[in-house]
Length: 140
Image (cartoon, rainbow, N blue to C red):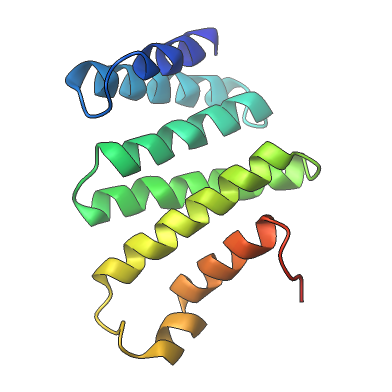
């Protein structure tokens, strides 16, 4: 766990997009996976891994389908985390961020973006509403 956090911190010391930053984020992700294997409900590891997955999706996974896979995993983990720690503001804010980024990434690649009903009533709209709700928006 400490190694995962250390690699995450080390990645932030390099310029975004560099091989060294990518290496440290990847290593951090691997170590968070190991930590979660032994302690599946470790809140710190869940949050840390989700944040790393978001960074990888934004800065290092240019093909949308790769970024989408990382973001889906982050959203799933963060949903679990918000159930384990419902009062955690950082978990909710990070979930909102992941939902928002996933929603916009899906919107970029969907064929039916001209059909507002299909967009709003489908996964894209659901993620957008979830992001809004997690940030304290309307709950109803």
